Length: 290
Image (tube, rainbow, N blue to C red):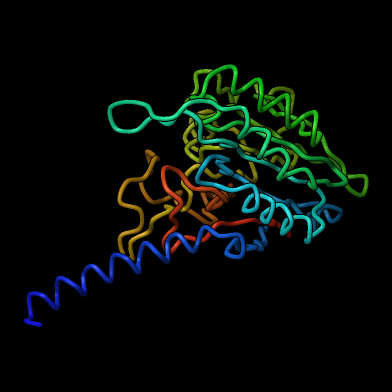
């Protein structure tokens, strides 16, 4: 074998090994349980140690199995969270890609997702917001997702509104908005009637909601998001080549601080377009307030 042939076959082997590893990372046993302590300013003593289970970007579809989503749900339940939050993209459905759209809404994947999440229970409840793919798949999709997950799991939807929750006699507020790319998204409505000094945790599928928070000068303690998949395919030193965010790599994954406000962006569970995750394992997250 001459040098040129050696390089050619070596490159082929590298590509096959890379994509093989990326595919392996989407299997059930590769979901990573990520425990994240988050220090919140002026947090009342009764709320210290509050556990929030976070699942996002489930993307139930022909490339994401029931077993993968169920595995992530089991990891969350193993931590016995006080409250569970779901931050959108329950299905892939219709996907806007390059110059057009691919895929369509299929209710079987909503049912599959709901069945896989059926074990989710928490003392303070299970709450959810919708993601861009849920909306892109049409109003039938939105209706099916909200109806099915409410009936089967008891998900309480925070569509531009807030709820007051209590632990140890002390209250905090959980807020939620429709997907940031939708005209129906309203941070103003979600914050309506809230005490400026209360502890506020915002659910937003897209972390770019931070732009609205800054413009409107709303005081939010913690934002919980997904959307970016952590990159899904992450190239060493470069990150994700194309980010679905106006802020570039800033809100790709992990805990990001903007003054006193913090945002946690989960890598999510599922995949889009192909069952491949490279340098970016699926994630089930437990946030602990300190």
